[in-house]
Amino acid sequence: MTEETKTRKEFNLLPSQKEELATKNSDNLKIGIFGGTFNPVHFGHLRTAEEVHEKLGLNLVLFVPASRPPHKNSSRIVPFIHRWKMLELALADNSHFTLSDIENRRPGKSYSIDTLRHLRKIYPKPNSLYFLLGIDAFQEITTWKDYKKLFELTSFVILARPGYNIRGTYDLLRSKISGYYEYDEENNLFSHPSLEAVHFCQVTLLDISSTRIRKLVSGGQSIRYLVPDSVKEYIEKTHIYQG
Image (tube, rainbow, N blue to C red; front, side, top):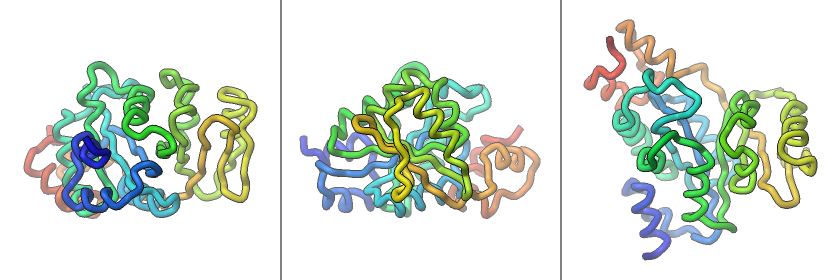
């Protein structure tokens, strides 16, 4: 099985993505990993992924919807199949966005360490993985399963607000991960002699949240211009956030 064939099977690539991926050097891909519940996916998610793709020169951004997230109340999350379908619709016209259902195919809770170990088997080094994460979530990284091991598997891309003070991240890395992390001001990242880098990426943070969208739908209000039209139509058709 070729690398491209394996990748198509694993990630259910959309037709527009297959030809593009075939032209890439399969030994040196830059893959962004964007996890979350996506309940539902909205323009804030999509714009963030687009800007990170452009700024870091990624080949693909892989959206990985969580099946059973360990840090959230699963009873408030619509079934995986609905969130998957909405992502399919939202990503359909973007050749450098794709989807993986690996967290749904794995039993138990959706831990990032398990997902990253799986992805590293598909994309061993020197392929590069970039895990997209909001600054607030990164500050809670020490509560994640096997959190120190994460830095052996992937670079992190911290989605920072303009003017964010990096001191808190510096202190966390040096005290909880490794004292050998150093800040590279020119490239706006923390580097390490053996672990993966931690990048800062300032993105357009749209004031949109999945929680707000669900409340609007439940209250019979419009969500137009908050989500792609195809996602809006799916929500209206399935009534998943009503009642």
